[in-house]
Image (tube, rainbow, N blue to C red; front, top):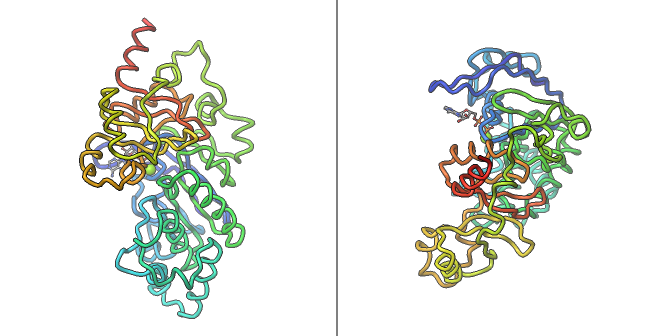
Length: 370
Ligand code: ADP
Ligand code: MG
């Protein structure tokens, strides 16, 4: 269905994003591309709808070289869902979802009926929601509409780039469940990018684990768990850590285990007090189960301080980089560099906050090793 034949990608600034990818995705398969930040997942995905072009190699869809297909035409036949939702704010839900079916000149009765069915399948009553505007829906509801919009024109391929990662853990789980249910019915070929191994294990027929622009292992979730190809895969699935003898130190050994945290329901004055008391410029926000929810900085507090009715949940940044326990320190440092940050939270596989790696905690740990 989708074939990558020795696909390489070098961006104009010289970044070698893909070093030669070979991949064969079957009709009706849900494949998850997973790997650390910057490994080339998004680049791989964007090549399928020609938002990025290979530097060399070939991509075939149904045996046809897509470099010969008009990109606009190609994209109409490929659904696309991204993290930042991308619904048009001035259009109703119904209008948003009907964009591509209209472009494809499908008959109104047929797509209206389909859209109602899809909305029902994800628990959004069409009568109640069709004429609302995106801003009237919660983040999770908007993302459901994003998924439906990608499916409405009956494309055979759907691309999803970390579509649920901006959502809170509960909505994320719900949308994963719904995607599994939808997929049973629609049986599309879905390429789903994730950085969350639990998500990949849950939804994928096959997991493509990538690192530094290469595929490290492409297998069913069961095979990845039972027969990881190497230490990188083992670490990524969270099975123990690299051999003690190797130089790889994990974040668990260098993180601060008692960073300053605050519940998401607390107010801004309370946040300010904690920052002052502990002399920090940011707080890690958790829910009652100590699950990591986001970060609040001094600047965010200052900006919203005049509004006494706000809670931290409403002002925090939910979509911040983090690493899982067991991650090699080198990967954490790379992420910090990539995102220009001086600290990065460490999170358990179950979403609970484990600690915080900071520049000074890193230096302390390195000094101890010498
Ligand atoms: P992922 O989705 O796995 O985080 P990406 O595919 O976005 O990774 O990026 C792979 C590599 O290519 C990274 O080193 C990234 O910085 C680089 N990259 C991505 N997009 C561009 C671009 N438009 N120009 C230059 N480099 C890019
Ligand atoms: Mg990406």
